[in-house]
Image (cartoon, rainbow, N blue to C red; front, side, top):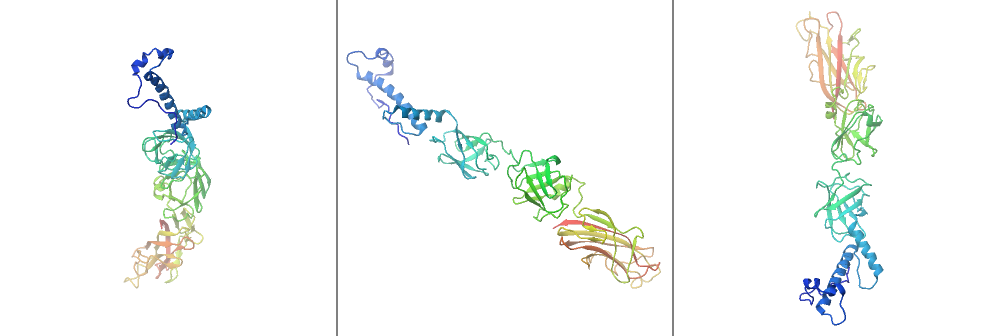
Length: 441
């Protein structure tokens, strides 16, 4: 503690001073003591009042300048200390934050002797984290709070801001902070006019701006370009982060559709595509991996080899969201690993004169082949000998099922089978059609 040498006089119990009322009416208080003997109680009263006042000024100077006030006769130095004390007591102190993002510090000149509901300004030089604390002039660590009493969150005090802080007795309140000013877990929307970048490097301008990335925050935007491969997203000039499926797998292309409202969530190291929310927000958005194709209507059939599975060309591509179906080869080769659903059907000719049923009547089948190997063994009508032509002009074969594809070189095709000639002497799969879509990983 600083020392104050300017001490009070005659303030002890039983001090030899006249009462205040007598001192007020004392003629010498107006004219001073004249020649002769002055009573000690009267002189002591005068000395005590002047010493009492000087002691208070010395104490004020000591407490606020935190410097010693010595009875050394150095009036100039005493005046300097007194001016420093006046400035400390009558103006807002301002300093720069130090320490760390979670445990900040600040120091003032002169320093505060106690918190005691102090007000001060702090220049933010570090981005404070959630629940950060502040230690003022080593007086002790206190929590930093918003003006509503809740702990501060990252982004409440951006670097370069000047905070107006008040001690409330147990914590330090940031009086000029608006809670949740920036992207603190809220959902913010960027229309097409605030979307830039390229197809696979999306740049969003959020209002209010996102000054940092907060895990869990959800963002919506209206894409202006459909992506074609692995994709990144950046907010307000922050470093780009990968945009992935919810399980962390990279995009293959076609997940982001221009003009279709898209939802993403900050997952820390990356953004995840909220596929369900994105599709709910725009019912016109096509399903990923969706395709539908059918056979050429002229002649509209495929001639099948005797007792051999024969590939059925489906050269008309009606829907192909990602461009993974090749009508030239009638192959579907998805570029995203996961499970896929397929369904296909076609008509077969019959031989109504053949009786009894098997093995004398026509058996037929349709099946999805994966990489040239039969698949979907339990679907209706996909195995020869389990479904037969009726007595009319034909019957249909149907297949459906789910399979996993590696997203690189796995491919799917449709094959058909017919072992007996129909009434026209042919083996034919007619009016073939098939389709499928991506289910997920």
